[in-house]
Length: 148
Ligand code: HEC
Ligand code: HEC
Image (spheres, rainbow, N blue to C red):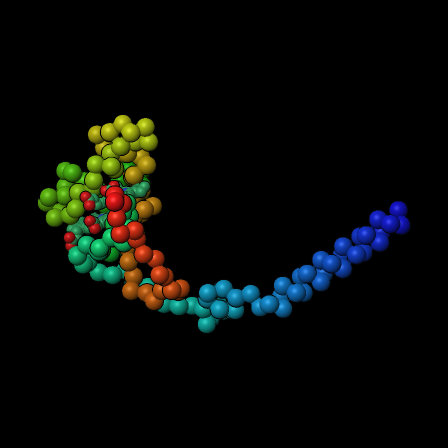
């Protein structure tokens, strides 16, 4: 009984010591040390880049970046704005890139007549671009060749 009380006190002191050590290190997020709701953190919303030519891909299998604005483009159960330009029926008239064949294969590799469910929500993989300064340096380099 007495032993466990002593152990409890030692443990509590240990935890207290640990927490004060952590706060002394001044952990800081990329947005600085201010709370989210303080005025100084309210940065202007970044604007999507307007339409431009396709953006070069940085690695094999990269979902191409969206080189145009998509503000207000809806994708839901009944309607997919992206497909009004990118589907195989509409791409010619819209002068848009047609979705590739991979987008028709379901997870069992069966090729469907329409976009497979797992490729339906385009913005899960394809993202628009803003002219924003990178938060951290990135030195990523793709492999130069897949087959040697
Ligand atoms: C009004 C027609 C239109 C709509 C709607 C549209 N796009 Fe596009 N998209 C284009 C055109 C045109 C291009 C080709 C740009 C060029 O060649 O200059 C393009 C290019 C792209 C590319 C680049 C392809 C590549 O090979 O690099 C991606 C990715 C893309 N769009 C995704 C989307 C997604 C996702 C949506 C829905 C959120 C969408 N687009 C909605 C017309 C459209
Ligand atoms: C699960 C991720 C994923 C989803 C969801 C997805 N894509 Fe893609 N997309 C890719 C990848 C990866 C590529 C490049 C390789 C390829 O063609 O499969 C690509 C390629 C493309 C291309 C370029 C095709 C070419 O021939 O260069 C277009 C255009 C495109 N996608 C549009 C769309 C649209 C529109 C949707 C929604 C209907 C969509 N994608 C949904 C991953 C995705």
